[in-house]
Length: 435
Image (cartoon, rainbow, N blue to C red; front, top):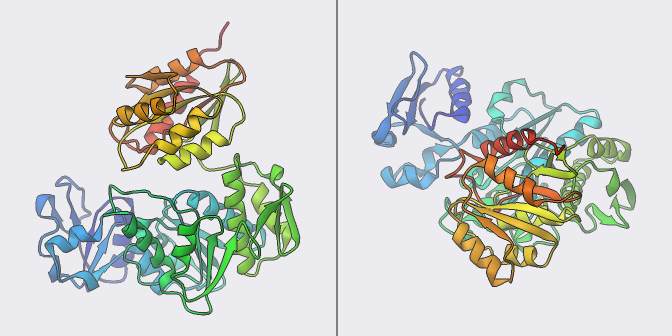
């Protein structure tokens, strides 16, 4: 077949190897005219990279490429467009696949799920949005293996296949600068469930209506979590089907939102037939968290500094604020994702936040929202991470938490959330203890 791979970053390179070893003719299409393409591989680069894609049999879009960008220039190719995830689900050697989506918590829940399956003695492959294309390991999978996929709306919007077990975590407005509107975002999440059969399982967060509406697209059996018959927390214990799994104090993860993530993972593996509570407990309690998710960087002069750069919505900033009982100095702000900051401002004003350092393009909107709720302890105008951290250090008192949980995307001041988090950690590590 004649195949176009649209977008040639990490995922595109994996797709190239997957299709090339299968004998297909490949053309790399990328907006960057300086893209380095391997010898012997055709390319279509620069401004014309989306032109005349109808000449290809298959068009493999990278997840970040919205299909409408392809269709705007090639209206007849909708049925030709696919993704790495689509190709994987269509051709996986195992049907033991758990797909996990939602607005936040996907990476943590996916990792917890994989760790529990491993503790139960299974060979597990973890991929998707967490950073590894499933096509990278498809040829190594055995039929009895398990696969856990973290899946974003970017990967799901044109999904043509569903896994045996699909899980939807909390859903709130997100990526509205990529999706046309919230309805399209919801519809993208539903694609994970819509191709399920009656023998499949659809898991949803019991306390979130949009999560339930996403899972309701499934023809399979609906199972809630944070409520029976799924896993839930009672008396600070995680319980499922009358079995005590573990106390929440046994988790190394901070915050009640991670209790919810743990319940989602336990529910998924229980539905997969894993009911060994010793293995489940081992998987849950062995995981200390992913980078840039409420990650403790260092204690300086009695202040604990936490990197939560992965959180890019007001809702995730609220969750981070609620994870700590101590007074907080917090960095908020960044680039616009179409969100409202009213509830975040309400949370700040009605908590023990000592001070807010407001940064980035959203400074005016966030500071106005804070003032509207009577909160005025703000610093604005700082544009570099070292200065932000120095300001935190000056303002925070012993026993406080210094928290980077901006509630916004990172673009403008930083390359991405990883760059923002890494700069924060470097600046914190550079602080000098008081004499």
